[in-house]
Image (cartoon, rainbow over all chains, first blue to last red; front, top):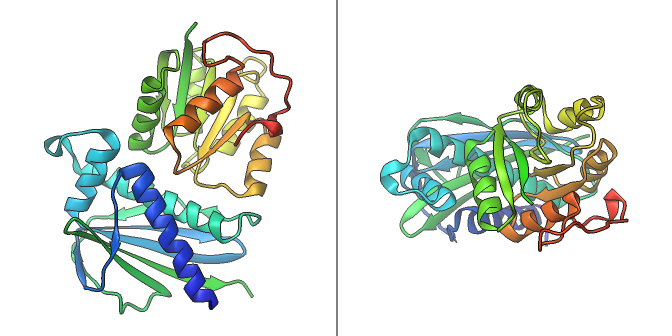
Length: 149
Length: 143
C-alpha cells in the first residue's frame, strides 16, 4: 500500500471513530459533490505540517449536537453547531496524528470556524478529499499535508 | 462521600458531555465547576475548593500544560489531582503532562467508562466510594 493510500485510510478510520464514539453518527463514503453550510479548519505542525478542513451541512451538524448533548432539534443553536463542528475536527486531527505516529509530538491550532455555503467536490486540489453520507446528510473532509524537509 | 469537580475545556459541548458522563456514571459529584481555559480555572480555584480537575490541553490563553505549571507552583493547589482529557495523545505529550503534574490521561474520543475509571483511580477511591491505598506512581496509572 502506498503512503498516501495508507494516510487516507488512517484519516478515514479517525473520522469514523470520532463520529461513532462521540456523536453516534455512522458515516458511509460517498462519490458525489455535496453542499455545505459551515467550514471548520485546524492546522497541525511537527514532523509534518498541514491543515484539515471539514465541510459540514447544517442538518448533519444539528444531528451531531442532538446526539452528543441529548438535545431536541428545536433546542439546537448555531453556537452549539459551531462548537460541535470545531470539537469534532479537533478530535479527528488528534486521533489521525496519533494513529499516524504515536511517538511524534504534533502541535494543533485552535480550530477556526466560518459559516458559509458552497459546494465541495472530491476533485479539490487537496492532498486528500473525502465525502461521507449519513442517512441522506453529507459532509466532506479535506487535508493538505507537507512533509518537513 | 462526594467530590467537587472542575472541568476545563474551551468547548461548551465537551464540558457538557464530560459533566453528563460523570453524573450518569454514578461518580459521587457534589459541585461541578466549569472553566473555558486555564486562566478561568485559576480564577475559580482562588475562590472554590475542588477535589479533582479534568482539563483539556489545547485551549486559548492558558492551555492545559500551562495550567499544570501554575497549579504546581501554588502551595494551596498543587495537591489537587488533574486528569488531562485531550486529543493530543502522543506518548511524548503524555509523558510531558505527567512530568508537569498530571495524574491521569484520557484520549478523545473516549468511552464513558474510561472517565469514571480514571476519576476513581486518581482520587484513590474505589468505585464503592471507599478510600483505597494506591501505591502506584502516576505513570503506572491506566491511560
